[in-house]
Image (cartoon, rainbow, N blue to C red; front, side, top):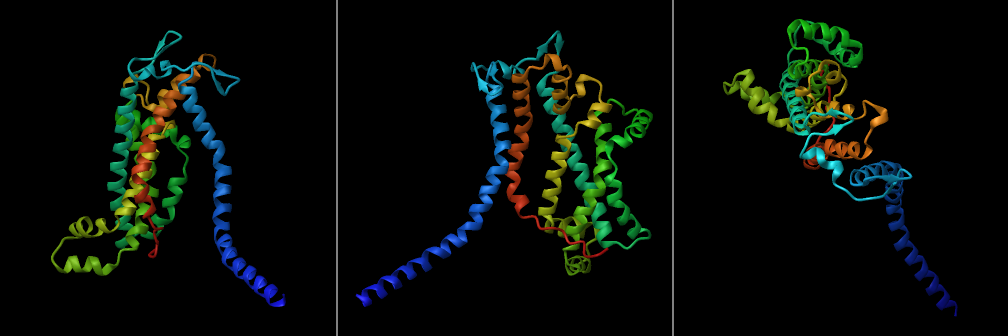
Length: 301
């Protein structure tokens, strides 16, 4: 009997040793996913409400769909008319949003890439002081510069012009973009550039053909963030764009809620989903590039 008890105790101890490490390894993941699930549940419910509301004629008690309809999505094939007001074409607003975001991304990547390389590699007078005030320049809120920007755009003849707002937004974003890209340039070894210079390449050719391909993850991350910043921009566009031919999706949404007494929540939900769709597609195709990004160094100050 004693031998049998000892064997049973040893068997239980062995089983406990086999099972307990598994639970100990899985416990942090279970806790992490549980916390993430609880914190993201309100956001998931919000997007679910938008989806249901966009296809419902009415929401009873605010969350129960009453009747299924495609009427809320009629802005895709015709102009929206509400309370005697005809809103601009949604495809024109979409095109303007893509032009604005794409132009902003191109300018930021080109100018920010050159500025980041100069801050990382070149030793010029005032370099340290410029780096110290770079983040300070980015810290200025756009609303504090509206009056000054208005006078500048009006003087240049770029008021009520999409390209004028592109230039303003680019100028506000470049300090942070240059700082981020500088960190990636700092991670590139000097030996790589010296090898290109010894082979007879110019400084620009070394930068374009050798260094830039080595920081592709950083360029991809900056491009994505620049596009998202332009896509979500509202204040500058609302302040300096007056005509309907230059309307973007952000200002289009504002037009739908300009009169609180005449808000069509089904239409507003449908346009909001349409507004988010390009961003969701961009995230799906770019998440691999974002996962490859390592934090830039900033080794050389």
